[in-house]
Length: 173
Image (tube, one colour):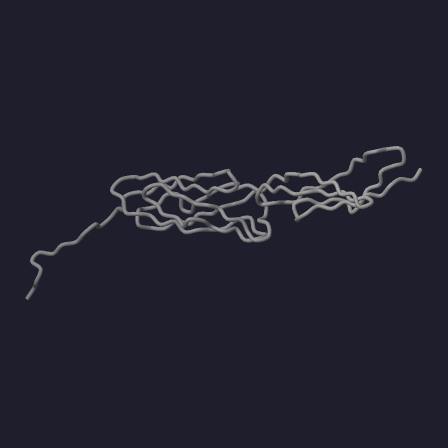
């Protein structure tokens, strides 16, 4: 029976290990579990084992599991010159510091460069401006995070109704 205790640690917050493991007598190795924590981007971390002033390290890559799940619009069809509200929704709550989703829009629509989903939240909203158009215009609204993207379609219609007014004569007595 018996064995040798080896101290373990992981740098940063991307990975959690036990504080120590025991290598049983007669063995040269031990298997242990290191748990990857939720990270907003793929992170390289180091696991360190210390015993009798000997330090051994190993690199571990923790992959981001958080993803952009969807971009939705309300309304998704509107007359040019009006605004829509977009929502960027994540697959799980944003981590500490928040998650920045990069935004882009096709001709006829404008969006901010990015929107931040605050820590602990699943989604964030952003404003979408539209231009006055003379015929139906389809604008793709795209959100990108950690290499993945989601797209929603915004249909911008020509404004119906009075486009201009003129009175003749322009003076009345």
